[in-house]
Length: 185
Image 1: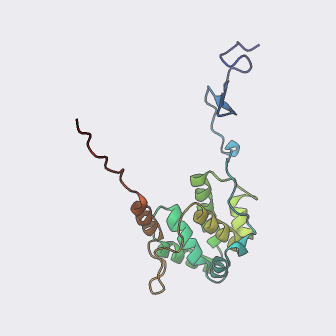
Image 2: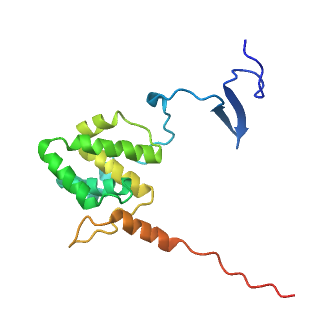
Image 3: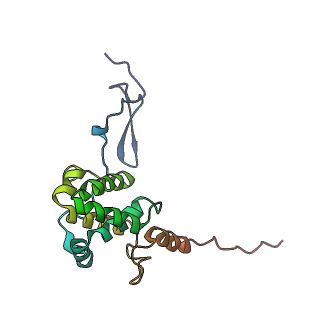
């Protein structure tokens, strides 16, 4: 029915091979895009209900979720919108009860940036039912990705430049290759 291909037979749409001991199956012809079939390859670093893994963040998020949301939003936005601005918008929307719809869009963006699974259910449903737990999970995920979520924060001027402080810290960690002495003849 299908002509033989370089993969040893089978469906011509797939080229099969082995890379590093794992089967590598890639389509040779493009599929129509379907957002429901995108396969997330990574799990969240912590579960949704593991809020007490970081008790300080859990308390802050319970009593003032706009702080945690602002930190998450600044990292997800890669510093284009400040932590303070995102936190204020979240706080104002919280007065209307619509903050969960705003924050669920950031969960979706975070998942897209780190290729995370949409679990345990749809992003908006997670934020609607478990807003505080969702924010804590996102905070822990970014922290586990290597971001120092408290950097750039001050007791006097909170919510300033978490993203830029992290980028400065990473920049200081980059070193130049050592200079090798010249060879003499």
